[in-house]
Image (cartoon, rainbow, N blue to C red; front, side):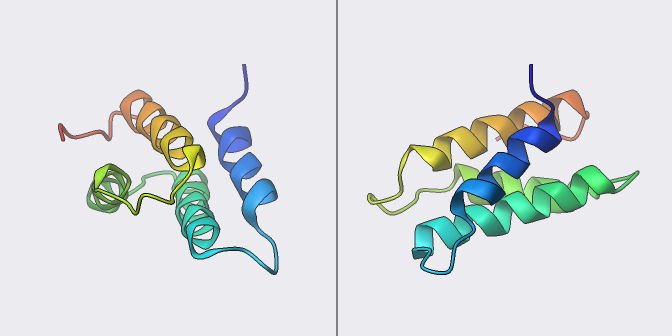
Length: 87
């Protein structure tokens, strides 16, 4: 089973590219924030809630399955870290 860090880093590796689409840049931005939370001994519950809200908000129809994968992984981490607030 991969760690939360490995999961987030897979998004960075897959979507960080010079010709990235807006969707891909959005995934990378959230994955980077997640890695920042993982590096922090005390991630801010408010900042985590902000990312959760962003991931749960409606997205353009052209956003692919990576968005749902990132959302599910981030929610999993937030739940395990005791930082998830009800939607």
